[in-house]
Length: 476
Ligand code: FUL
Image (tube, rainbow, N blue to C red; front, side):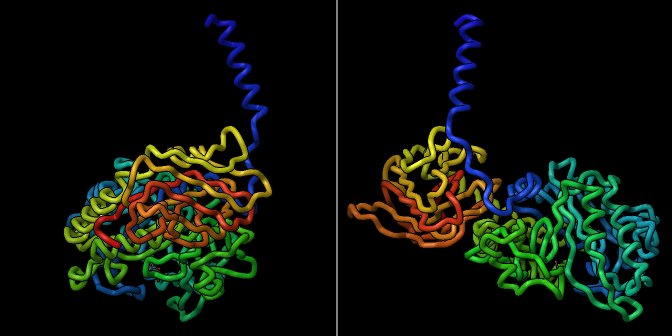
């Protein structure tokens, strides 16, 4: 082809694409690009670290002397290297827990690392962790508790302004970009015995102003919501949409079942985040080292969080040295090996896909590649659909993974899966409700030459970007 022919061919192709079917219109509340990127992180690590690490308390009362905080061998690169090796994408640290102690030299407080003898008052855990995250390619996030049992202003209007300045000293760029701001809903008494009326619009506005891309966690968002329990379990039905009108974080939050399952067609996008600790407590304690969760427990948590349209925020609390305990890090490596053993091989690879579609660009085969932005979609107005995969031979599996294309909203509300088995029959192997960003359905182990996905009900014409089959040989 000469140059002129090339240009003509390119124009024709462009014209053909322009004449092709359009993408479905977004449906209902949809995530922002930052919320999509956040959900794609799938697993982040939580680090509870502070005076409680040294006192053994879960909630310090704010009277602890600053010198209590004295990690003997702090190494944040050990935390981030461990998280990275275990397949985690981000880290969130308790910069300030309810005891009010700040792991950075906050100018708003006299209860910080700067008042301690640790590193002669020159230490800054946020500096070290944010640098370590950058070095290991993890995103950096912060938990900053509004409830403060040390600050004498807590319980008076002055505290809200002080809390905003506290946020500014972390989010103002000093520690680089922050991907998630974690706001705990707990609102107990301060040192004055008083409770605070939190100014949530002002707190959220401060985060949005300084870190526009940061996803704000609280019981009710606005960026993402609490999953409603601390045991690692998202709802089997789990909508990323939620009706938040009239609710607030903490005592004013919706019932935990609503947090666990979301609201179908809800007015606000606030996907569930599942926060759970690898240990019984949130902070490290020598006495709990023999109760670090097993690989089976971690796999169950994975299937019931990431596999149920939620992000997993797994707490791995550093010890009094300021390092991850070897028992925990070994367990994390075993967990990663177990995940890899299941997800290394997609048994749908090489399959052919058939089903109705809205036309070129939205073919059923799009579910077979890992490009998130190429998806299968049916025509507007169709709220049921069938997709058949002819597998590349008989395949044995017990996990069916589905992914909706969430930038256009969450749509599927009921589906079932059938497998074509050696006896020449279609056999129903699963019947479920929602899909969302990622759904991993656990089935009995089955050997089949074809798989049929039937979308029985959707709030709008469904989209699917991925269907994959896996075999977890270690678990039913
Ligand atoms: C809770 C806190 O009270 C716990 O101490 C812990 O930080 C957990 C993640 O959130 O609300």
